[in-house]
Structure formats: structure tokens, C-alpha cells
Length: 231
Image (cartoon, rainbow, N blue to C red; front, side, top):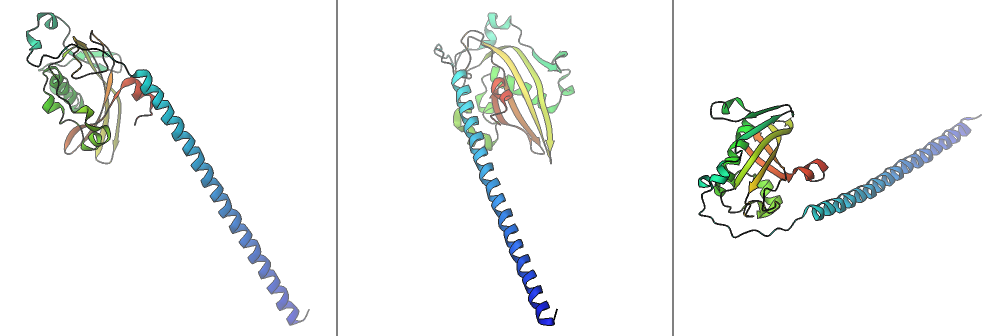
């Protein structure tokens, strides 16, 4: 084989390699595009299914009650019937140990439980101004003004707090506290999803703790919380 033939052969080999490389690149690009389309379609289907499920849950859990006119001047702490109920704030630890928060043991509990103890007392005392300050700005933007309201003193009883999830990320800690209670003579100014007479529907306060303190970054009924759809 003379030199010219060798040059021609090498050129043909290079051209073949270029074509193979071009075909391979096109195949990879095409595969990536196809994967992207599949992922987009699956994501759209998942989001649609999630949206429809949430819509169904919202519809199923939406109740309508008729409440008596609220008396903002009524002092529930002078109501003998209410005072005879169990008004202690219990703490459920792992479903085994049940303790009551008292003044002499208050500091033995975690800051998050102490925070929720104070929140419960805001609700009982009708201290809506302080209660409305517990939420993060992000949550208020997401939830709207529905969590910000004026309410009367609330006759809470059979009260229980339970830490259901805890995690840390960076300099922040996240605690999900399930809060259970009943409301005697519910007038609808604080909870519109509970019956007038001793309704029961636990809620979860999603707390975020950092160097600035503790705030509520989410609030869900326990049922919605367990679905994992409303995070």
C-alpha cells in the first residue's frame, strides 16, 4: 500500500469515527430528551393525582356547624361546670408516659413543649393578639389570613401534647406537635371544624426553632398531616 492509499484509508477511518460519534451523541441527546418528557409526564400525572386526592380529602373533612352568638365578655374561668372538667395539660411521651405540666416542672420539658403549653393558655384566655404572633410570615403568606382571627376565651379540656416528629437542618430544628383537646360550648370563633358540644379533632403545629426563637410554620389536622400531602 503506497502512501496516498494509506492517507485515504486513514481519512475514511476518521470519517467513520466522526459519523459513529455523531450518531452516538444524537442517540444520547434523544434518550435524554425522551427521559425528560417521561419525567415531565409522570410529574404532571403525580401532581394531578395529588391535587385530586387533596381536593377529595378537603371535601370529606369539611363540616358545617351552627354556633351560638359569641359572648366576648364571658369569663369561662368563672363557669363552675367548666372548672370541674379536666383542664390539665398532659404530655404524651411515646404513648407510654403521661405527665402533667405544672409550674414546678415546667422547665423540665423541651422548649417546644413549653411553647405549646403557652399557646394552649393563649387559646383558653382568648389572647388572640399574642396567638396571632406565633406564626411565621411565610406560613401566613401561604395560608392567608384564615389563621389570624379574634376569638373568645375557649373552654378547652382533656388537653394533650405529643411530639410526633423531630428533625434538624442547618441551624434550625423542626418539631411537629400533635395537640388534642375538646372545647366545651364551642362558639366557632377559634375552631370552625369542631362540633358545638365537645368536638374532637387533633391538630399538628409544625414548629421551627432557631436562634431567634420558636414559631409555627404550619398547622394541619392530624388526619391531613398523616397523608403527607400537605407539607
